[in-house]
Image 1: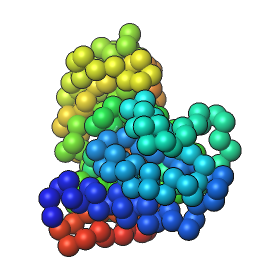
Image 2: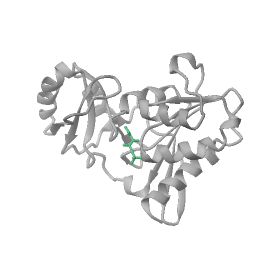
Image 3: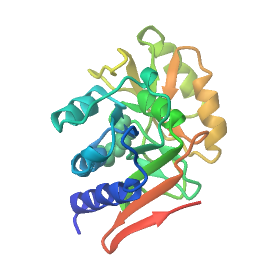
Image 4: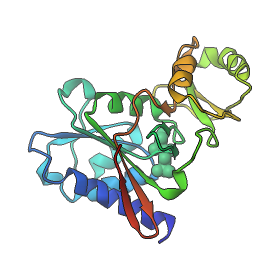
Length: 223
Ligand code: 5RP
């Protein structure tokens, strides 16, 4: 199985997880990225079984709409049973690094609201220690250099994602050389820097279920 086929397989497996659990008034949280796009393709096939979706990015909102799936503002939704999204890295504690696509702030908000966060990945995303993938940090533009100097004190190397603006109008620092052993503490510490909007560590709110695409099929990981 190629990596693309593994992404398609976990997209299908995520829809299998949702089937029979959705009601006609259910709203599904939908993530961002190439694996989430595979999920959207499959979700569209059962669109008659639920009400609509909340999107974690403008790109995802457009894609959902193009499939005829209504997209709601999160503020108008009372309950979100499921959020389905990809990740850049995951560990055995179900902690994640996200934000390769720069959408982690909205992703984190939707994940916070959802009862169940189903993470869909191919097996290349599994790591023993988070941090090989540079940790994305969304910053208010005027704070970028200050936050970068503060992040250097973590013995890390923040690199400005030049030319990229988030859906929230902010900028991103990709933080290299982090070896993340205490993910919850680091997530909080970075979030506490003035000017940081959020960072791509999903440790305080990790995934609940991880569907991992492998050459032999999809592994369903539960805690
Ligand atoms: C976007 C994300 C994505 O979920 C993450 O980058 C994984 O993307 P892909 O499925 O394309 O590998 O966090 O902000």
